[in-house]
Picture: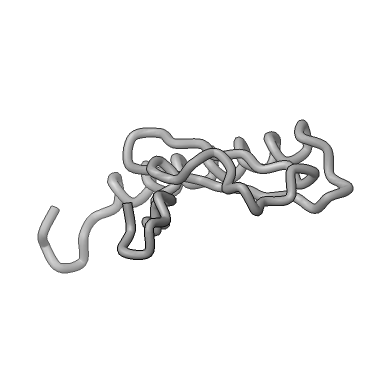
Length: 81
C-alpha cells in the first residue's frame, strides 16, 4: 500500500500490474502477455475488437522472441560470448 493509502502498484511491470485499474476505460481492449523475461502490453482503441489486439500482442511477442534468439546466436563484438 502506498503512502497515500492507494493500494494500486506503481510498478510498470505488467506482471505486477492489476488487470484493470478502477479508472480504466473498460471499452478499450488490452492484452498482457508474459513469456519468461519478456512482457508485452498492447492496448487498442475503443473501436478495436479484442481479437485484433490479441493478434497484435502475439505478433509483437513473436518478433521479440525471434530477435532475442538472433541476439543469442550472434557473435559478441566485445568477445564476451
